[in-house]
Image 1 (cartoon, each protein chain N blue to C red):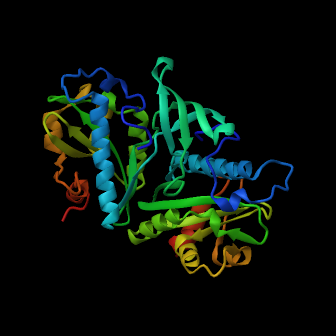
Image 2 (spheres, rainbow over the protein chains, first blue to last red; image 1 turned 45 degrees about the vertical axis):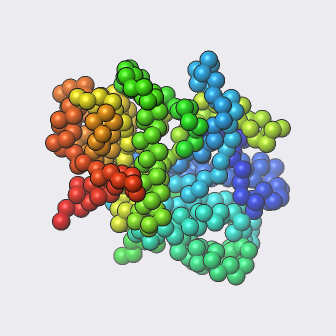
Image 3 (cartoon, chains in turn yellow, red; image 1 turned 180 degrees about the vertical axis):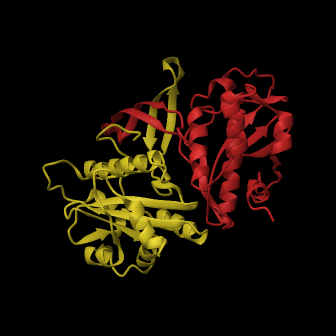
Length: 196
Length: 196
């Protein structure tokens, strides 16, 4: 995590409009909790020598640096990630994915996904990489792996502005949750991309 | 590039000590030129649908954000990359590498490489990824791909504090330079990792 609790880069429109109904915290905070859990899962995979998956740091556009104060940045802005948040290597294969959290009980708004993320994941698939989304439905308490080919097709065809949760359940792979790793998403990767 | 010309995060010790003898600019600037050329090569590979390789943004530790000024960061510091600068996918395989520039005509100082980068690349190799260094010898005008297994072994055994250029020439793969892509490092990846 490269920003302190409560500080995070701007979200795509879909999330900003979400209504805050939980007393526990803001939508952004919940997204950060999910991100922190994925980061912890990645650290568990790394320390158990199962895979190496890292989060791309949030890109920051640095405008001004004060060298009299030990290269302190005094003026900068968060930028949007032009690709996805996570990539890495598992069993020699390239993995690339985006982790998203939604509070909706009915659907996942496509506005949560930036067009350049779709393009990036389509490119990854053309080059033989494993591409997917992890969608955390925080109020339902379930998280699904959705292969990127399915999401990208849905996005390109845009039958709706959001993906019904029923379709996520039908086409996705439910993640096993636990203490360690918090989200065993590589088990779902096995199911989805390494069929027996 | 997430920082303007002339602004860059602190370098490992080895480079700081380099003597500036060229009137063209500082050591840091030259490192940035090489980085910019690799970024341009990656963009060429992407636009020609050959591979997807991206630079990890420089991690920044954000201390303070002014929300009254549109989420302007007013206090932050550059952090050291805990992994490498570049990773991506080529022919389904995971690629991971670090790009370094040196002005020395005789050797490449190992102090340019952080211990956690060696650990990271060793992990990548254990998981079947393709790991290497691109070493730009700017005064000689040559750039070499060195497989990470060779560099990591050299680093672990530390027969010297730097790698003689003669050994880099012997064990490395000379990059073809041109207009587009500026550095055709995937040709060297083919030679080194996809032997006919």
